[in-house]
Length: 461
Image 1 (cartoon, rainbow, N blue to C red):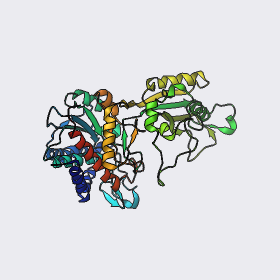
Image 2: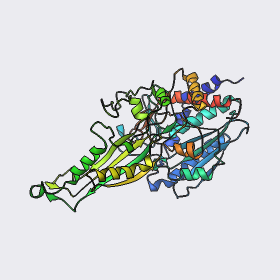
Image 3: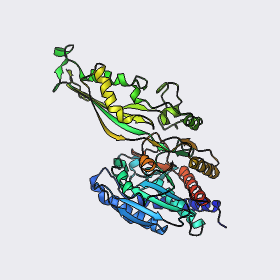
Image 4: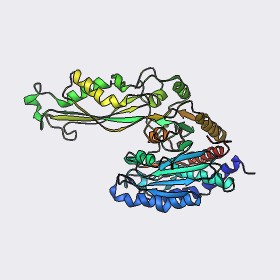
């Protein structure tokens, strides 16, 4: 009789034989840069030439869905075994950021995998080809161990526009709501808490870009002739920003802050330690909201970050008062924040407090979302991971960054469980993107265990 251990052994064999890395190498070879209009054919080819045959081998029925806005296509894969059994929906994205050819260490080619020590380099290894490849390989191992059965029903949606903000994912999911109907959402993206600790997160923080512009006059004016009698837009802008966030990263304006952290969230984060490795940036002392742990600041609170500032020519500064100054800020926020009121709130505050010349506008807004912390699926997933690894996984109320989780949690009404397979130092949007071999092997066993346990469920839901 097949067992859970058999499924895990099969997925280990798949990894240790080198077959998993060969599959990943073929997927990395598709130059699926969604920011590059010239790569539209590669986006489609990745789905048609690689993923559709791979899903067909797993007995999934697949079809391509065209983007309603003319962006990259979508792939929906569907495996139906027994209507009385649970159905899981999972997600991945085949697009990647710019390859940054020529900027990688030792001249590495981003469009092929290269193993150096315990690292596997290549664009998409961490974000996201490696992660959805792990989940597909785990499904295969479970199916093999059960003699051609999963024990549940499974659906995938793979998009090719995540790196440009998933512009029409919500519209596609809404249009195919019945086709994507499920009991549970399990997917993988983003990093673990650390390379050593398996992690679950239940949603993501949102983001709201805030543009601040001070345009007083055309061109610059000699600082010797005009200094002291002309307002300096850079000085105004610096002080306007300082009125929103202080020199230790603490937000001053209430509209930027979230509601109080719940006891349930605090309890979940009580054993979560933010501990960067030697090659990752080290935590700043005395930075951020007072009275919170580092984990609470990162996963349960809001932050206002200055992303970019510009005034004059920093490379060749002239002895002149600039005519304009500009900054782009970003509010990263958790569920419960009144983010729709942020732009108007910042504008009203600045204009009433001495900065009527600062123009405030918003762009690139995406919402926060989170599965209910009381969902029984959380303990189910955590127990499965603990059984497989012998480690208590970190359970984060939400990912510190952003993913289109709200499309699934709010749009489709599903409990969402994210099981990331990367780690914070993976360089996912930079040269030298990589995954770690030990984390990858462990991730394969984690997912085989989760999928096996889903097939052991006694009834639907």
